[in-house]
Length: 271
Image (cartoon, rainbow, N blue to C red; front, side):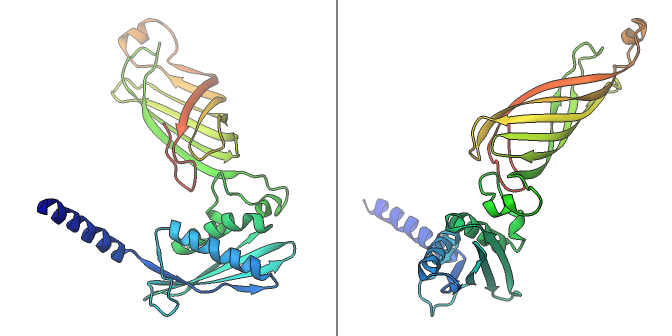
């Protein structure tokens, strides 16, 4: 029994030590410019939640010291709101950024993006994911669509059929994608080459379209590719003896399917 209590005591000490090492943040009372007190209170609450979700321990005592001090402001801009957040950290220069939202309904989305951006010290406009493109971003500029632009680089093994060799192929795919809620058109490039010395290789480029079977950040998808490609068959005695050309070119068509496990931010994971 004593051993059990000792074990629990050790776990409790480790847990509280871990909490004590967590970075602390103090959030000052938001300053409202041209907005009602209820909007300021809502901003303060969603700001606290966003900071907590960012794995920072919020200091409730306004006189207590903290590793990071956040100074928020919310202003009325036309029919929307401008969220401003300044970060002051020990031994670092102050960092400030802003983000515009179209209505109170986007306070949670806008605040979360602004908090994450300020903590990373990068523009909030680059922090969008497939689920949090705001209405203001959709309507800003000239007919901006509700999409997230991504650069895709994928690699893995591949095998060819009827190419005169069964050697393992290295496969690399690159693409630039305009990803919406369900549809994701893209420009792609496909490259395959043999691991051995058979000189078997292929390359293709064209257009692709993926369809997501759900709007969540983790969702399966199916897709098709169409383009033009070139192919070099394996350079062996058999392929030379059959009298066929070693080089081919023509229309390429492909299909794919996978599941995205982290459909957000700059980097994601899919299989």
